[in-house]
Amino acid sequence: MTEIKNLLAQLSEAHGVSGYEGAIGTLVATELKPYVDEIKTDRLGNLIATKRGKKPSVMIAAHLDEIGLMVKYIEKEGFIRFSTIGGWFDQTLLNQRVVLHTDSGAVTGVIGSKPPHRMKKEEREKPIKAEDMFIDVGASSMEEVEQLGIAIGTTVTIDGHFATLKNERVTCKAFDNRAGVAIMIEALKRTNTEFEVYAVGTVQEEVGLKGARTAAFELKPDVAIAIDTDIAGGHPGLEKKDATVELDKGPAITVSDASGRGIITPPSVLKWLKDTAARYNIDYQLSVSEGGMTDAAIIHLTRSGVPTGVIGVPTRYIHSPVELLSLKDIDKSAELLARAIEHVGDYF
Image 1 (cartoon, rainbow, N blue to C red):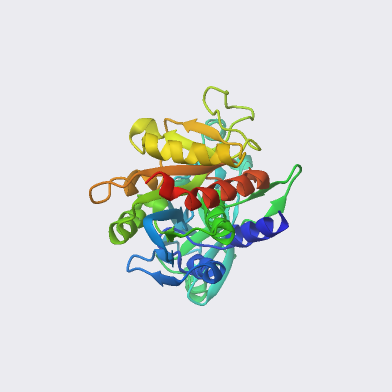
Image 2 (image 1 turned 90 degrees about the horizontal axis):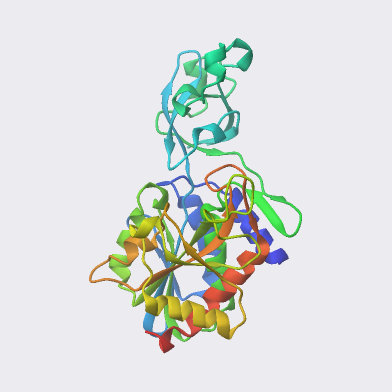
């Protein structure tokens, strides 16, 4: 479990907002290199690692990008206004420490807003919107900000650090979807499959599933599995009926997401994954959700259609700086994926 934890820590602390996944892609390529025959990056930026073998071919998709921010305006006093990239709940941004990624290196800043001591009663009772927040890098003028290499379009990520909690649970930013990337890498380490595998680190998932569309079109896989996070309940504010997936109960196999607007998993794919879990005594959960979708939503519509499923790792507090999951679920998810790849020929 230590090896998985170290890998997840390295991946989640790395930075890569949608459209700027180069650094995380390089890291993933290094991890995958010993277990595949070829690695390339396509024109959109997807990392495609191929393990050659016979048909049917399997595409594994784990998106590299994380939600973040982008500089949109620098005030003359040196404060920086930003736009959100991906699905943020604005209140989770307030008073966070951030990293601005310039051509000359990383710059630390903090997200500030008007202090409560100077707010009127009606202001304190209203949520603060991202458009009313700003980044402070300590500069006293626009010129000082620009001297740091910060400009309109500079990307910004949360300055999040990996931490270990009780019961083999861990927390960090960007588990969505560095957890999926870790599972993909770990499964490639464990599998001895004779079938062709495309391990794809997709780009720009958080802003429209863009990388999965182009990668699946190029690769033409016979079947595909998207690896992502799944919303875990079991904490205050979420009733069991609204979030049935829980920590420490194994990977979540998606039956349907986004009320069917995302993926309705074909029965053949469900049987493949459920049979594999039963064969190897891997605990799993079934997931049906109304909100959120994964790369599977676009992969299964590629060309004339690709049978596609989703393995999700249960994660609390998704799309926040303090996402939380269980290393036990990471381990079981990787095991399910590795074994499923080995038996894909029995089903497709």
